[in-house]
Image (cartoon, rainbow, N blue to C red):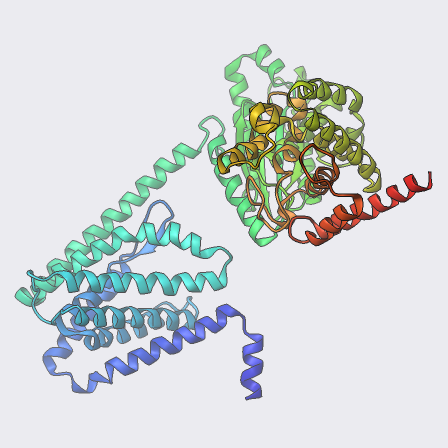
Length: 610
């Protein structure tokens, strides 16, 4: 018993599932087949060998279907036809020797995977045979007047296959059930419908024509498998052309967007690093003007080939982003490694000869590059690109031909005019003076809280700038809310409340009109997200919400609770602190709420002493 407990304790969920699945499949096989091999007649043995050969031939002619390219074969039609003609026990009698032959033939595949495969097929055959009998199906010739049992058997076969494989991937890989739903279920449905039709065809041909019917069936199945194979090859060719930039041979911008989204999802779910490099050829316009666009295209092609060669055999994928800009998507690579790799590329390009390089200021081919990494609180893929773009912009300002890491403290953060930014935002906030004076005052108070807390949090200049300006502008979207709703004293209706919630989206759109305030969008859009995921507009949870946005939520809520407004109950400081403590871990980040409470208590004590 201790051995079993230790085994269960050590085994992970996927291993336990494999054991249970194998036991279930083998048990079902033994129960239904009941060693029918000892009771088969000579004619039945001939039919077993015949069906066994058909299943092996169809297993050999596997094919892939777009878009994911999952492996498929028509061997299931043989097992279904055996059910329709001779029953589930006979179908299992065909399955066992097929599985043994594949075990000997395909030794590269782990033995336990062969057992799992056999077990899944056993469960599928058993389920299909039971449903076939339960819905009134009778083994023998096809009953054209009652097709329900045949469709029901296929449905059972398909559902059991989907569930067993789906659960296996669920225990093996995160978020795999959704992947199974998108890839396996949707793509395989057409193949299974073909399988049903072929199994019915096989039943008719074998019952009426014997071996000749089986040969005709195999010819039809092989041709159909070949057709699917050619379809997938054609799809791959079209997809490759659609995703490839013809001038450089690299993937294009559209494919970059798609892959970036996929890699972000993987990094988010598995907690793995992801870095992005953005490259811009230095002085490309000067070269184009001097030598013409054809020679300029040759330079683009050279860089495309250069990036393709340098990333070959690695996890790094190169893309042409547009014009003379290129991106490198680097999953599994942290920021320092990405920076080192980009610098190595830059130096190697400097040493690459090319006609006309004397027109460049550095006398060689060069690029400037920005590198950024994925952070857990990035809720939009454009944030990663924006950070890489800002690092690239700074790299070019430093004289070009260099690489800059986003967030590194080597001068980039000093280029800030906070005073002017505050004045520009306050000019927009002045519109609240006639529409809602309370919102105007609230924004100014939240801004002052943020100034104090930026010192307490020891923020760097860039973070401080974004945090305090974000606090000042966070409610700017309320300018779009009708005066009657914004100043309503009675309880809001559900429709009016939805209008109020829309201010985060409207505020985001207003900030997007000025590039200087693009970094403030998270504060505008996310200050009503909750730590427990029950907030809006996205329902982000915990660390998915940027840390300083979580801090802003605490500040915003505290000020709203302690602000005197007509016809509304106002909390004193102690009551508001209790509310923060009570909602800590649900609405508010516990650590940041506690930090703010200490700040408020110290501030209140200082005011009392004065």
